[in-house]
Image 1 (cartoon, rainbow, N blue to C red):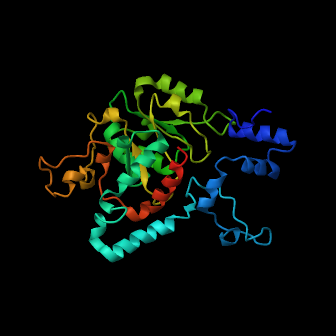
Image 2 (cartoon, rainbow, N blue to C red; image 1 turned 180 degrees about the vertical axis):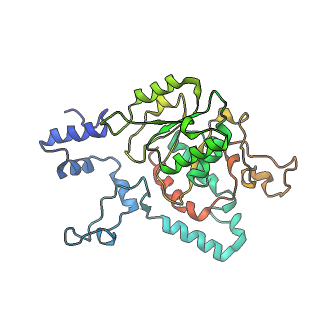
Image 3 (cartoon, rainbow, N blue to C red; image 1 turned 135 degrees about the vertical axis):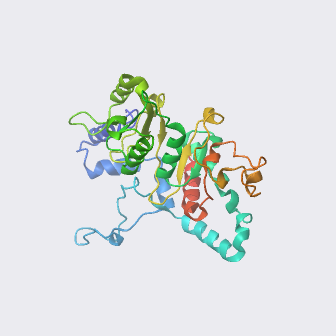
Length: 324
């Protein structure tokens, strides 16, 4: 029997399973079949899923409030890992008992806490640890990277992105274009699906890149489109651009990827003390020769790592790393 998941798009998978079961693709039986055959289903037990009765829009005359909800908004905020509370309480306890010594003591010293998780994040995105930095929020990171990598000229000033990009991404691109003295109306290339379609075709994206050629200074596409859930063919598109976007939420810690080939040629446009090498960071020498920038993507850190807000990320990446 043909595996209904082999080489399938989500739409094809639903149709194949429905055919296999002799029912509609929207049948509850299809969902039950997918759950039963989900090889990652055991990971659900490591997260807290809200009960229907705890959610504000629920009409308890129609549903069983004690049932767990069906959660489909991970693009806005992921579910809480069960271990997140433990990690958070450990950091609060350390703060209470040791104060400033928490920077250098304990199982996760704050002064180099990011070292524990950047290698885990590198595994997720298929990068080397020195190419990954976990810092700030997503929009701040986009601004920092565009300040370094977006170098428009009169002939080469356009930025290619989706017409329905996440609003903050759109605003960041607009403001960077204006900052460099260009007009967003002329410098933003907005990709739209074909009439009657919801997603972008890879062939159409590549065609625009080819047609616009050297007028494009930067391609900025998410790995997964936040609104439609479309998974872009990054292997084809990254010949012209880079990628971003993982599941987080408002106020969550963001990541940045800088290919190692740029290590010695494109330096950070904005600096802060946390981007300096740990061996010299705490000398407080303010620009003296013995204070060196960190030799990896870490050099783009501007401020101290936010340990409390990263507790859930430590747990989440620990769960994810078990899959590699």
